[in-house]
Amino acid sequence: MAAYRTYDPDLVAPFLRVRDRYGPFSNMASGYQIRVCGVETGSSEALYQALRFPHLPEFQAEVLSQASPILAKRHAYTRVADTRPDWDRVRVNVMRYVLRAKFGSAQGALLELLRGTGEAPIVEVSHRDDYWGARPVDGRLIGRNVLGRLLMELRAELDEHPSGSPLLIAPRFPDPILLGRPLTPDRVGPAPSADLFPE
Image (tube, rainbow, N blue to C red; front, side, top):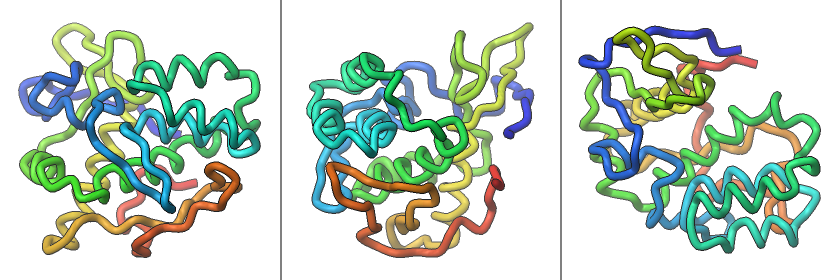
């Protein structure tokens, strides 16, 4: 499990709202067309939520068709009781796959924004969620910051492949099924060399 970390807010690349400088890193940022295995969706949140339900292809289609990331999340939560039973164990690897799909779908400006963070810690600032993000506490940001750390992992991969977009990795979770078909990467690459969340 990812350990809690403490960050100096003056030394990080933070994002809280989608309109922030690094707001496009948020799963709630819309307008980033993601294509995997012939399926298109407008946000990483929609893809992430759909992958909760590999056994429910019709419901996955409903989640993917929502008009915004927040609506996709809300729709997924109408059947949260039907979430795959191993979700807590696989969700980090699901998010890892989703981020590579997002950044690898010809998102030139998005890739440059990620590269532009340099070596600064990337932190999702959240007042409620200290698992995916970090909460402001007494002038510091404290949390597990799993989303930010996955983005840093992806940034390191970009440094290893500076001439092109990130390579999709094969899904590293059981039953990677979307709309009744198994997910296979359009571009096969190695697993990340700096795995921040070993199983």
